[in-house]
Length: 592
Image (cartoon, rainbow, N blue to C red; front, top):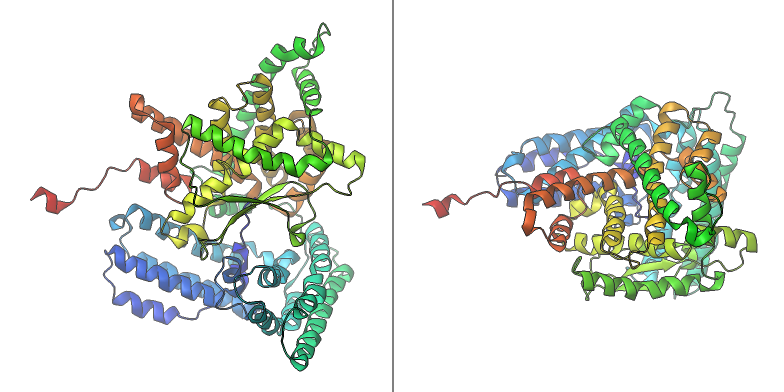
C-alpha cells in the first residue's frame, strides 16, 4: 500500500510567502512553461516551510526540527495560503502549458481546494483525534538514513520542544469525537510512544554526543513521552455524550471523493459500476467453478446456489499454500519468475538499474505479516526500492492457517504482481523518471492503486499461470476485494450499512475469511473514500486501455500502451487520458 500524509496540510500550512507569491507572479511570463516551472519550485519551498511534517515524509529534510502547533490561527493561515496559491495559478493560461505542466497545475489547484474543504467544511480536526499524531514524523527522522545519526537526533531533539504545547492545543480543538477514531488514536499513541521513550535513547548510545547534551535530550524525551501518554489518558476519560458518527454522510463523502480520488465520475456512479462489476465476476466465477467441479469433486452433485459452489471451490483451492516458515522465501522466489514472464511476453520494459531489493520486514514496520513496497521519496529518486516481506513466526497455528488460506499459492503470486512487478514497484520506477516533483508529491492514489489492479488483469490475459482456470478463478476472487471495497465503503458511509451486512458481503459474496472481513470492517470504520481508490483507478485505466486499443487497431501494442501511460507519473487517470488522446501541437516555425 502506498501511504500519503496529505491531511497534515490541514494543520500546519501557513501564510508565509503569500505576498511574495503575488509579487513573483507579476514578473513572470504567464504563457511560459519555464516560468511555470519556476513557480512550482517556489510553491514547493513555501509548502514545505509551512508543512514540515509533510516535508519530512517525502524526503525534504530542511525543516525536520520544526513542529507547528495546530491552533485555530494556523488553520486560518492554511486557508489563506491555499487561496493565494489558487490566485497565483489562475494567472497562468493552463491550455498554453505543456501536457505535463497542465497536469501539475490541476493537481496543485485540487490540493489547495482540498485544504479549504478540510478546514472550512469537513473539520476533522474536531472529531478525529488521530489527525494529531506526531509520532510518525519522529519515526521517519529516526529510522531513515538520509543524514548522519547525530544530525538526525539533534533535529529530533529540537522538534520535541513543542510536543507538550501541541497536545494541549489538540485537547482544546477536539469536540464530540468519533468513538472508533478515539480508540484508534489511543492505541496509536500508546503503541508508538516507544519511538520517543525508548528508541531515541537507544540511538543516542550509538553516538559521540557529549554526556551533558545527551542528558538534556533524554530529559526532553521524557517530558515529550509523558505529554503523549497524558493525551491518550485524556482521550480515555473524555466525556463524550454526543459523539459524531464514524459514517461520513453522502454530502461529505462525495466532496471528499472529488478531491481525494479525482475521478471522471461521482462516488455514486463508481458505486453503481462496482455493483455491476460484482455481478459480472460472480457470473464468470460460476462458469469456471462449474467446469472445475468434476476435477475436484468427482460425481458429487453441484449445489444449486452458485455462490455456494463457488465458495466451496475456492475453499478447496485455498488449501494449497506454503508452510508458515516458507512464506518469505516463497515471495522471494516469485520475483524472478515474474520478471522472466514479463520479458517473454514483452509487457513492459523493466529497468535493470533500479533493482527491487527483497528484504525481511524491518522491525519498526513489523506487526502485520504480508508484503509491501517502500519506494524512495521524490527527493531521493536514486534510492533503493524495497519489497518488505513479513513473517508469521510466533503466530498461533489456527491464525497462521487462516492467513495462509487467504494468501494461498495462487493469491501469493497475484499479490507479488500487485505489490511488485509489474504493479507498484514498476509504476513507481516510471514515476520517478518523470521530471515533475508535483506528480510524486501530490500523486493520485487511485491511479497508483488502479494500475496495480490493472496490471494483475494484464498478466492474467497474457497467460500467467499457464492459463489455468484455477488461477483465473482465484484472480477473480482477489479482484472482488477491490470491487467490494468500493461497495462496502460507499454503503457504510452513505447508506448506513450495518456490520452484519458488511461481514455478509465480504464473506459470502467476496469469499473472504472471517478474520479478513473483521479487519476490513475495522478499517472502514476509521477511514473513508480511500477504499474506493483500487476499483476506481482500475475501472478508468481499463476503459482508457480499451479506447486506446480501438484507436490503434492493428497497430496496437500492449507494451507501447503501458509505457506511454506510465510515462505521465502518478497523475489522475482522467488527466493522463486527456494527454494521451490530445492532438499534438504543431510548431508554427516549421510551417513557415
